[in-house]
Length: 385
Ligand code: PMP
Image 1 (tube, rainbow, N blue to C red):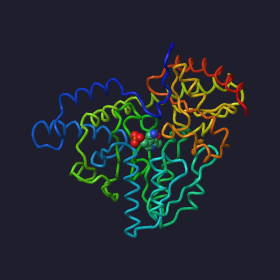
Image 2 (image 1 turned 60 degrees about the vertical axis):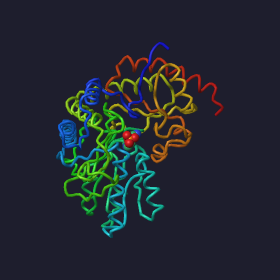
Image 3 (image 1 turned 180 degrees about the horizontal axis):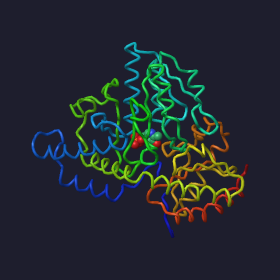
């Protein structure tokens, strides 16, 4: 294999070298339990608090509004469980979310419905943007929580979170956004968007896996999801993974420092890839909204070529991409995100997500542009369709 190109950064990213160093150092030196009162514990706790401050600066909130979790899945589940509890206490009757959320919300919605909780899902338009008119229609004073993701993991489509938050609050509902894919790529601000809750995971912005954040506004209702110890003021039990949390803090600092350059560099590479594909391969469909899009994400359908076959052939050439969502790998179901945007089943089956990241180069893009056209040509020739 002559070359390897990792273009699956929406599935996960490599830890930044600075993060790797910080994690290794914290793991070997600062191994005390951050809840212990002795010096080993206090040293570990200082790293946790350092990370809390860095995260609060990245997402524009107060340090005490940051709770460390195992990742966005847990943060999302916690928020929906808070909403469920509010409904059970009679504080309202419904949750409103969308049809294109990550499975950690879509599956939670299915579970909550089985438990008798009402959840409405707002549809999206052909570009994957939430239909604001539909949201307005669906809203009412009985809604306890509105949850809309900031940027979609498959198409990269960005939502108007500030506007949606304003609508949610007008009806007295709490506002949550899953910002997992947007952090480090676009400006995300709890303050500016007037959010009540936000979820994210460190491994999507060059931090360690298995650690994330739940932001909850100072006076927003909170209900513990993981019960046990008194960590995080009783909000989330479990011994602190100090090294991972510290790594998350370093990743947050790097993300904040480089956000403008990162955005522009990713967008330029994405556009080089998009125009190159459109020019060299006939009959392709670029999915999602091209105007409001996360800078590194490009989702393309290749009619008469199966997504899985494209993925495997690219893999043989050392290129890592994804079909739809990596979380859906193992199932040959077409992407529900693309179907929700009105794409037909065949096009949804032939879709490939390229997701560029900090460590990609223009040479990587050019290598993909060299390998991809003959792969599609070959698959179309053998296609029985
Ligand atoms: N939300 C979104 C938008 C995501 O892309 C992901 C990860 N694919 C998650 C939530 C879940 O993150 P984690 O697996 O780290 O819990």
